Amino acid sequence: MQKRRLGKNGREISCLGYGAMSFTNFYGEANDDGSLAILAAALDEGVDHLDTSNVYGMGRSETVIGKFLSKQGKQKDKLFSIASKVGICRNAETGQRFYDNSESHIRGELEKTLQRLGVENIDLYYIHRRQTEIPIEEVTETMQTLVKDGKINSFGFSEISPSSLERANRIAHVAAVQSEYSLSVRSPEMGLTQMTKELGTALVAFSPLGRSLLTDAPHNFKTAQELEFLKINPRFLEPNLSTNISKVAGFQKLAADFGLTAAGLAIAWLLHKDEHIIPIPGTRSIQHFKDNCAGARKSLSADDMAMIEKTLPIGWAHGDRYSSEQWFGVERYC
Image (cartoon, rainbow, N blue to C red; front, side):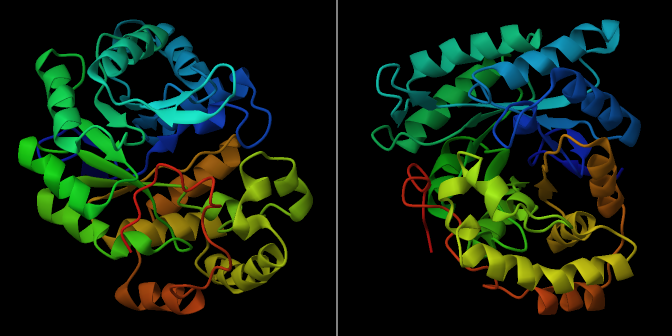
């Protein structure tokens, strides 16, 4: 597996990471034994970057990773580059989501994360969503203090705008920005890919498979309606969903011509967009995981890239990527 650097001065990690939200019930019922098997497969495939969060299953994702690491003996701290996140909260009584970027909250949640993982520090710590009442410069100073304390090796932000990244980077180097980026979500190309490259910041692409649309088996309407996130997502509501599935058919055929699954080709395309981009797909299937890895190893020419983008051009997907509720906390910049 090829390597890419996690920020300007950071550790070299596999060009493909793994999104450990799949260790929770977000996209259907998860099985901890299956999650542990995925981690073992990651080691076999040379995938050494894990992305998790304190809110993924309310700590379940981190706990599963910690359980795996606890069985690895003295090597446990050397096997993976682990990233986690902080900042999303829910009101215990109403269930309403809110954001907390205060230093006390960040420090308190980090200690819980380290305890669940069973480690003394992690490679990368993100602000999962920005609390707009606190200037990003102040939050950056908090994160930089955690670096100096040895609790984290680097920090980043999720779903922020290029202008916010520029402001934060004036205080300290931002190792990574996480954003949804795929053949179905091209908005990062309107400033974020350029700014991250200029600053030496890794662009970590979540949902690189379009939440299943860029696979050989996209979720149908019935399945989407059984999943809390997708049942209100515009791209998975009719008539958008049927249109999107029909548009992906040509891409699925093209992927087969390349000897890949649709997911594998979507990963290959993203990795060839720029050398600082790191996709983090999640899956519960060992075979799908291996298909993603095959895509990460595939070489594409400029003509290949042009053919892919002709098959699924910018703007092909019907429906917004988020509902109005799901946009809450995400910085729009275009």
